[in-house]
Image (cartoon, rainbow, N blue to C red):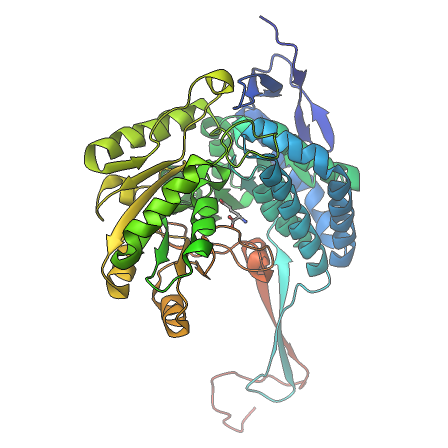
Length: 498
Ligand code: UN1
């Protein structure tokens, strides 16, 4: 049956196009299962055309002075500010996060685009002394060329913008492949740059599956860098595939982020933090609090208070400002999370929730209630990323055990400790194996002007956001200028001769 939803095309070389006979897919609202819009299922040919358009646009974009590129970014940020209410609503309708977070997703985009616009007047290199006289040494940053940005659905505007704004300010041209279930949000991302006046071919959009569009992009030797955020398994495939053409592959992958709750913590503060960290975005953040490691002295009291609060935790329509948690993002997500809940029921003690919600509006969407398991360290639910509203609680006897448990997972993105002891807070800053550590705050809520990324299986060493975001998208060129008018030899002792 032909659908009545709005059809969107690919964005290639500055034009929205729908290839003849293109296959299409639809996105759906996870709170209602109503279709949102339809998109082209891109092919390897479409990727070829997008890369060609990006390649063609590159020389002139590279020559555009970086502060001028910054002006275009600033205009994109300004437009997005105007559109924030509308785009925030699209985020909530297509991805399911509550409206305050949908708007927050857009705000994170605005913040980062503005921040990167300013980078157009920095893009710093270094000047460094030479070991020889009358010789000057410096570094400059140069763009890489065509880069691919492959992004997930959980921050459907913010993560694309983290990548696209950093890539563009650095002088690269981009092919953007968004997660399929949030393609409508991706259209908004692209339109913002289009309306800001970013020239044709500088940013291109190819919607479609990872297996076709993603693989074609990662395999294409003309693409010099791939920036990927997603799951570990896919990340590993992307890394291996990209290695064939020796391209730089930047990976931002999963997390199993702990909050450590010490016996001297402000429990009321921690309660708010754990609820937001574990159940905000229905637990579907890479940074979500998925483990709560609690000192035995406060274990029972804290868990009691936590479950009391959950009795009054509003789950429901994500567009209603009173709702704290909406649906999970898709049928796939729902299935995977329910599988983990079933595993948890076998290996751990279910303390709260543990069910798909039913009745009324819940029957229309993908709703899972906030879930808490009490478990031992080493169980699957305590070590594997679930990416849903499922919190594993672990009891420990002291700080040393808390840190050992916190670190004994394959991931290392975010981490947190609640304590009033300043020495312990600084100790934790050194001890926790993670790219991000919070003190007296939950594991979520990183700000764009600071680096974002993790250790171990969370990535392969790079960082997004902050001023270091441009490292991913620039080549460093080293320049030596010898103004001595004679041949000078580094490392070789002056023999006083010719
Ligand atoms: C993610 O889940 O991949 O720190 C990104 C945070 C957000 C970004 C999360 N600012 O929770």
